[in-house]
Length: 124
Image 1 (spheres, one colour):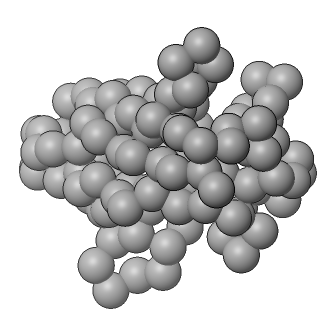
Image 2: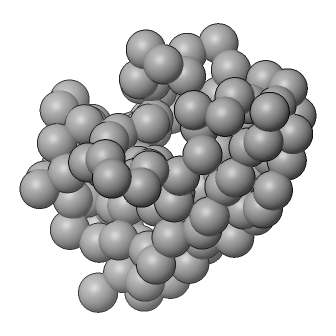
């Protein structure tokens, strides 16, 4: 089992920044790909970004150039640096891990482990 715990959410004005963290514990060697997803009220959950074990990254078009995914293997921690935030980024953000490479990183049903989520609210 892999446990994931997110933190770092909060409220910020448009144009501001936040950094989300996700600490992984348990059998972390089973996590080949880790990703961030988000779900806004009344909308389906969508992929935001993912990072492979080799450090290669993928992003949703809506966040390219504004968000950066990274990880610290020594700390078993995944990050999402979010800059130039927009009201449309308001959502619950979830960390997820899977035993497959990130090729189809946006497919939620291919992730084995999920965190409980952290709320991000961006006001105009």
